[in-house]
Image (cartoon, rainbow over all chains, first blue to last red; front, side, top):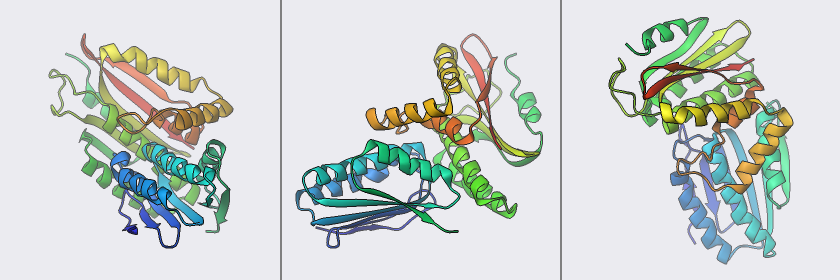
Length: 126
Length: 182
């Protein structure tokens, strides 16, 4: 299965979906007007990955900014991962936020309250 | 004679204006505006926390215009383009203000008013609960935002939305909103 790497742009994040390492990374900013268009191929990749996942899947999300349009799409990604987890795969989400960024911290708490996967909040020092 | 948009625009220029824009709210214009405010916020050596909040709320405000504005009426003295809107970012004493303006069809006014009044009536705790409910339970709307935009703005700023509806003619009103970030 192919590994997808997308470089970041002013409105979209760096993304790495690595099926060989079981690694999913989303970093930077996610503020496109049409988030569904951006995230659809990533969700499709997760569907495929879900049929033959590795034993361990690590997810690192380190966003500087994201808009409400992206928030739904990020949840869709987490929901796909939740399915994997429910089927017995080990999945772990690391949610990074800068130490004084209470909005990003709260966003992490929002997701933590909605999805049922091991979820670690990691503070980054400035 | 309709709503005097130039007069309103001039009145919104109080404080130190960091960005003002009246015209088509296209994806390209949004990218340009974001680049511009990012530079000016950085130059001001603003605290990281405030800078990020202003940027975030600006993104939601301008994208709210992008997704929801109506085509302006032919009688309005503005460019006749589908996504016409106004956005101003100003710094005024200890707070930042984001003012937006756009034409709305009269028949949609009551829905909009009810929606904002409802969001304004929520406590911080209720805002969080409603936000999580919508995020977790409803499918994304066709426009992608799922109705979270103004909830997110009020939640992040901790301030109520201030708005005014100025009648233009029988079919249209001009909707103006101020968001304060302290």
